[in-house]
Length: 352
Ligand code: ATP
Ligand code: MG
Image (cartoon, rainbow, N blue to C red; front, side, top):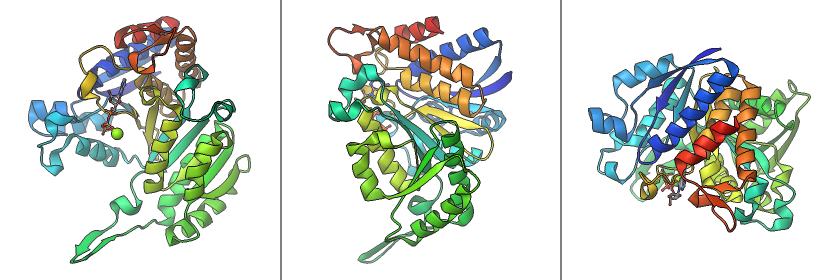
């Protein structure tokens, strides 16, 4: 299989973690006889340094040709003085809209080897944490009209049937390759948008008889995530609720360094990145945990290239390395073997 991957190395630890993820991509190429073509694309702070713009035209051209985008983290204190429309994070928003990425998938998986890092009680953790938050990314209150009139401020929240259908479809299809359950999270006792979500999602569910559907109010969902996260498989929700719940979800695992994410649209093109930021405090020290980025590569194999075996191969390799006791500093605990960013990448490659 031949695929074109746009590589946005990003800022601070970005280039370090992406470097390790590329090693993993190359090992998958060699093992399974695929050809991946890597296009280096400047976006974010690195693009500002080189061109003055957070997403220059040449980058846009390259991104449009890509089958998938791999991204480190962008931004950091060096760019704080940039005007609002040229901040590194703006580049991400533009890439999302350029590629029509309206769904954000964030898995919350607790590796049993890292169970001590979870803030939850052992008896809850023991039941396992393995679910995905599917968050709508381009609609809702963040994109509605914002207005301040004297002493009054208004933020508008709107969703169309079509916007709900397309994100719900992603959730049902994700459930089909997982454990066949979707929990739609909303506030249907108060919000009209949520009532519409319920209606549309219920209708669409008829096309997925192999997927079990239930509904939950967001306040209850926030509570249930702490009380019994094992009940969830796929959580489907709108933009703001998803923003909040996906941060809560990643905290449950206690290790932001090991979580990847995918942003998807109607085509198979997707953008893959770790959930953490550019971590300026540890940049250039070969200390960053590359596993979140490496596991994002596994998601790229699964969701953009439909290479399930390759995805599982990467995930299994990570699992084995953790079993063997290797940890970067952020995951370190007594009796484990501490390694740097590059050595962690090498270990995963060797395993593959
Ligand atoms: P952003 O606003 O970009 O999300 P943030 O302020 O939330 O950034 P992060 O950059 O995610 O912060 O970092 C938060 C803390 O976690 C920092 O102390 C950082 O060193 C640590 N951290 C983040 N990512 C990693 C990683 N891959 N490996 C090790 N430590 C990390
Ligand atoms: Mg953050």
